[in-house]
Length: 475
Image (cartoon, rainbow, N blue to C red):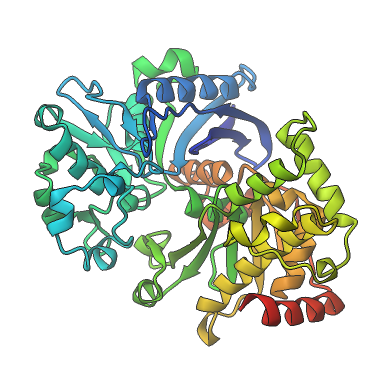
């Protein structure tokens, strides 16, 4: 009987799913939009029940694509993580789930946060203290909604909620636990001092496991809608960026993954966790539990949203879909010369470029600005010990021939296009295969994948032009 593997990437705006065969062939892909609500300024919420319902339906669509002679050996869930879900003793939500983009804990003073010393959190948890993530949101709920907080029986993110729904086992992987700011990365346990500050008992937290570990089997309640069998294994996934690194083969320190979405996020395998933290980067456990590298993460926050703003404004009034606007954006960019005839756009300051939108070279200048920002981030960590030989790029901009050549030319580093917009789901499918015993390890799983890739080499003449503009305009 032919065996299949399912990987899901549960993102903020959409859920992407992929099913591969044990031979690494992509059998089918599915995508489902998520639903966020904005009840008041600074609040971004979602229904965890509706979220999980869409997960079940998406898995069911994937499973429908196989014949009666095939079976799904394992499923793994990766995702953006960092959401806050609070449940009562019956595992019912006490309030709407809080999205990681919500910033109520920043906008509204939370006394315990203002009084606490957060200086050690980055070194312990791998992430600096961020007021939009679970620790801060739980502190907010405790202070602003004390009745609900007193009734709590469990904290989880959307990822361990999904794991429980599929297996009836509360479990979360080390990587996905990291954004909670309550995980001790070196001790591989929940940080007792953080839990004590917000009055969260450890029994209310999920079991911690490493990525690619078997959590359990698909429970009876999840079998009907998902069409999975009792024998299908549920395997632990990872945070979305390390999952994307597995799906695109970024395992060594000479490689960098750039995931382009609402923010552009860089994921760099490193063996020196402390150096990454000293440089202000986020640390992910990645392959460290097996003696492999950690993942160092940096971001160019909200650059994708800024580019969307530009694209909407440039083609305002044309009654086009966002897809069609981006088609025009790419075409116009290709019509402009390298360096945009000297036009420089600084996406870090909207006030500095709004008056330039009528320029015929503006579209290309926006693409070049994004590439300059990426180069600037790379130069901050790519010292003699971190020389890059290749950049792997995934996400929407990786589909643009113009934009990808610009990134290669501006950085001067060969650019690999792989994974498209389902890199994270592919990585999760590989982890499912490792847990099921089909692949020896994550590298073996990636090498088995039959996915197309393309290399974009920097063009020397263009790089010289960009070096001059970058040194003059950006630094």
